Amino acid sequence: MKRFYKTVSVQPRDGGSVVLLDGRVLKTPARAEMVLPTRALAEAVAAEWDAQQTKIAPLQMPLTRLAATAIDRVAADPAPTMQDILRYSSTDLLSYRVTEPAGLAARQVAVWQPLLDWFRQRFDIQLQVTTGIVAVPQAADMPVRLTRICDALDAMRLTALHAATTITGSVVLGLAMLERHQAAAEAHAAGLLDELYQAEQWGEDDEARQRRAALLAELQAVEIFLECLSRPEGTDLH
Image (tube, rainbow, N blue to C red; front, side):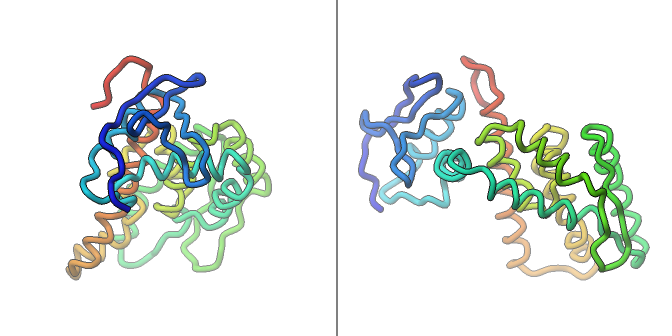
């Protein structure tokens, strides 16, 4: 799609803010007005649209995509998004360890165990760990506890949690980002710990490096999205 607008601006609307393209409110793919809960998020979305040149490249607008997903899909019916997140309660990356090589096993303990300890202290959920390939049984009430956590989130934050969880393969890492316990770069490194270790030992190709860079960019967009949601009105995003 060619760029069809000249000016991009932000305006207060209905307890939030909207992005205007040539004075017209930006809409989601489902044609709903994209009313954003904070001015900081509206300005960040507006910056994505203003940065487009002769053609609009949706892949260069991750904040717009997250906001549109929250409005069109998650707000309308949060259940599928919550179910996606809950699936990680039995397959969370941080539950599955190796015994060999010793260097990788030690790194998993050093990086992942503090996260599981934080998860237990913060949410009173003990995630079981195994060194086998068979799914490890978790506490029977874990889905209920995670459901309560998800129920307490608005559509925007639930969307962000879903994105962080699916990108990293871990609801623990997703919640660590949501709670701002971990930055995007830290969650990215923890989620790809095994792959990064192997790359250190054996080297890697450009394709793997580019894929990791793309995943990091996605997580960084989630991080900015969350920061915009929590930024007090009237302050600048840096």
